[in-house]
Image 1 (tube, rainbow, N blue to C red):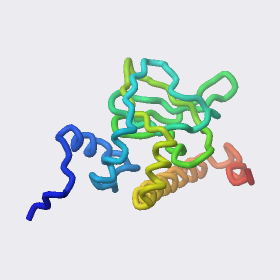
Image 2 (image 1 turned 90 degrees about the vertical axis):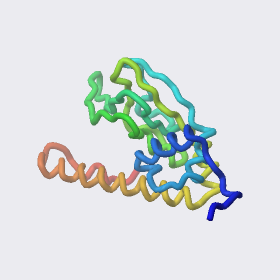
Image 3 (image 1 turned 45 degrees about the horizontal axis):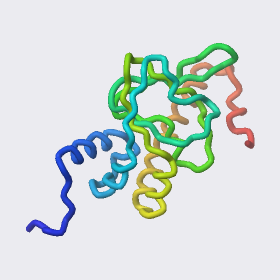
Amino acid sequence: MLNPLKKTYSASDKQLFRFLQKNLLFERLEDNELAEFVPFLHLRSYKKNEAIFFRKDPSQAIYIIKSGEVALNLDIEDKFEELTRIGVAQSFGDNALLESTYRIYNAVCTTETSEIYVLATTNVLEIFENNVNIKAKMMTAMAENYEKQNVNLFRAYQESFGFFDLGRAFMKL
């Protein structure tokens, strides 16, 4: 039996929802929860070698790649060490889900053009305040991702034992 009062979504809304669900932060959200983000998604275009943000900038938005590719890197003196390259449906700047954080790496467009959805932290926090289920699902996804990154960090350290002092990562901030 169909519920005549149930919210319906356009084909383009549903297409956007399926796209967002390819991203680990949004994959657990239902259509009605994803709809909360739609008014706040701003599509921006970036050109090759254009910086999206720099390390130590305030974390003011989450970015989700619609098309193209982005390099995440660290600046060490006058050199840049690439951490990874990410593509379609992947997000970066996820620490913007946390209040008063700063970027820990640089993000630079690596393809001729990249279209990227920008979702401001203030909007995300407003959604979180009004819907604890969305917050719980997204924060769980972020924690699981950070766990995977820690596992990878420890594996890299074990494979290059002594190359750097891992204990420095656990110093009090």
